[in-house]
Image 1 (cartoon, one colour):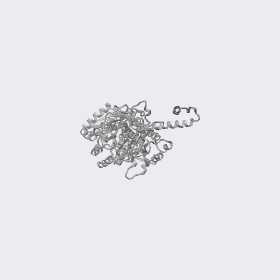
Image 2: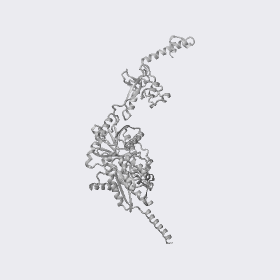
Image 3: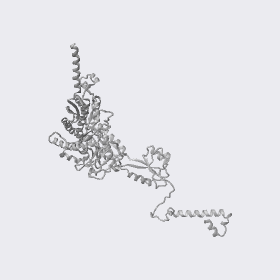
Image 4: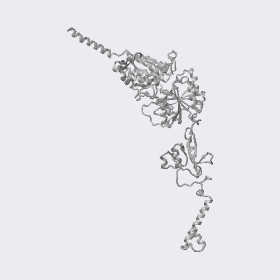
Amino acid sequence: MRQGVALPLHTLIWVFLTGSLYCQRPSVVNIGAIFTFNSVIGRVAKTAMEAAVSDVNADPRILNGTELRLHMEDANCSVFLGSVEVFQVLDKSIVAIVGPQSSSIAHMISEIANGLQIPLISYAATDPSLSALQFPFFLRTTQSDAYQMAAMADLIDFYGWKEVIAVYVDDDYGRNGVYTLGDELEKKMSRISYKLALPVQFNLSDITELLNKSKVLGPRVYVVHVDPDPRLRIFTVAKQLQMMTSSYVWLATDWLSTTIDSFSPTNRTSLTVLEGVVTLRQHIPQSNRKRAFISRWKKMQKEGLASSELNAYGLYAYDTVWAVSHSIENFINEYRNISFSFIDRLHDMKPSKIELGKLKVFDGGSLLLGKLLKTNMSGLTGQVQFNEDRNLVSGGYDVINIDQMTIRTVGFWTNYSGFSVSPQKTLKGRRSSYSQLDYKLDNVTWPGGNTERPRGWVIADNEKPLRIGVPNRASFVEFVTELNDSHTVQGYCIDVFTEARKLVPYDIPYRFEPFGDGLSNPNYDELVKMVAENVFDAAVGDIAIVKNRTLIVDFSQPYATTGLVIVAPIDNSKSNAWVFLKPFTWEMWCVTAAFFVMIAVVIWTLEHRVNKDFRGPPKRQLVTMFL
C-alpha cells in the first residue's frame, strides 16, 4: 500500500518540477550576426551592435532577468564563407540572425532561415528581389533599393535627362538594383541606354577598360551603383580619363554617401575626386537620442572602441538589435519558453563530416516573426515600423552634392511629395499627385565647377543615325525636295522637323534619304510602306494622313490642314486694303481681261440675232456685251 501511494506522489513532484522548468523565464537568449567585419558598413555595424547589446542588458525595462548574447561571425565579403559561418552561429541555439549586409549572402542565408524558421533581420541588404513572398522569414530594417531607385529616377527626370549609363557591380545587389532603376525610368519616359557591369572583385584596369569604352557613347549621365569603396576607385579613374569635366554628370546611390560619411576628418582630401558628384543618403531625422549617440560615438573613438566615423547603417544596426530585443521580450512575456526541435530528415541522413543532424528548428520562429512585424518603437533612426513589404517605413532620402571638398545637402525626397529643400514629415499613405512643378532643389555644382544643368549627352562617335525618307518632289517644292542633287534637303516640312528635334533633350543622329527621282512626284503609299518595312526609320514630308496608311505606320499630329487657301509670296509685310490683289501678277491680269473679252464676244454672237438688246449703234452693243 505504501508503494501504491509513493508512485503517484513521485509522479506529481516530477510533473510540478517539469512544469516549473517549462514556464521559467530563460536566463540567456542568443542572437547571431553575419557580416563582414573589415568593411565600410561592417566596422560601424559591429561597434553599434555591441553598444546596443550592452544598452539592452543594462536596461531593466527590457528582458528583465534574461541576458541577451550576440554571436558574431565574419563573412569576409564571400557568399561561400558567409554560408558556412551561418552554421557556426546556428550551433548556439539562436532565435534570430541580424544581418547580413551583403544581398548575395542574404539570398543564401534566407533559404536556411526559412528552413529553420529563424527570423533574419538585415540592416543593409537592399536587393529588391529579397521579397517577403519568397523569403517569409526575411525582414529589413532599412529600405529596399526599389525605394531608392524611385528617388534616383525622379532625380534624373527632374533635370530632364532621358538617357543614362548605369555602372554597377555584377552581383544580385547590382543587377537587381539597376533592373529596378530601368523600370522606374520607363515610367518617366526615360531609359538606361547602356549597362556597364564590373566584376565583383574589380580592379583599376577593369574600371579603366569599362569607362574608356563608354567615352564613345552618346549619353553623359552616369549612375553608379556599387558596394561602398573607401578608395573611390571609379571616380579616381574617371578623373584620370578626363571624365569629370563639365560635359559629364555623375550620380551615385547611397553607397557613396555611406563611404564619405565614414571618412575621418583627416581623410576628407579624398573628396577632391568627387567634385560635382550628386548622391543619395537615407534621411534620418534629428533627435535628442541621435545627437546623444553621436556624442557617445565620438567618445568611443577616443577610447579606441570605434575605428570609423558613424554612418547611417551603423544607426540602423543599433536599432535592429533593439527591435529584436523588444520582440523577444514580448515573445517571452506571452509564451515564456524558448524551445528547439531536431529535423528528422536531417538527423536520419547521418552525415560523416558536417553534423547537419545537429541543426534545430526554432519552434517559436513564426511567433517571434509575428512579434517583429508588429514592432513600433522609437529608435535612433526615427520610428521603427515595417510596411507590408517587410521593409522599414522610411523618411526618404537626402540629396547630397560634393562641392570643393564640402558635403552639401541640396534637398530631400520622399515618395509622396517628391523633392523639396526642407525635409517633409513622413506619410504612410500612397504617393500623392504632386507634379514636377512642385519639386525644388538648391543649386547644384556639377563636375568642372559648372552651376548650369549639363546637357547630358553628346553626339556619339559610333552611333547609327536614323534613316529618314523624304519625298523628292517635282512640284510644290516649297514643302520638301532635294536641292539640285546637292544632297541638301529643304522645305517647310524639313523646317518643322528641325524645330521639333530641338525640343528633344538628347541627341538624335539622323540622315535624310530622298525618295524619288525629282522629275515626277513620288508615290506616297510606297514611301509609307517602306517605313513599315524598316527600309526607312521614319519619313518627313507633306504626307496626307489617310486610313490605309494609318493601318501600317504611326503619324505625328498634323501640323498643316488642307482647305480653301491662297498661297502667295509676300514681299511687303505691311497690311493694306488692297492686299487681296497681291496674288495676281500682270500675266494673270492680262489672261483675266482676255477671258472677259472672249466671253463677251461669245455672248454677243449668240444673242445678236434673237435679242434686240444686242442691236443698235455699235457703242450700245459694246456696253451691253461687257455688262
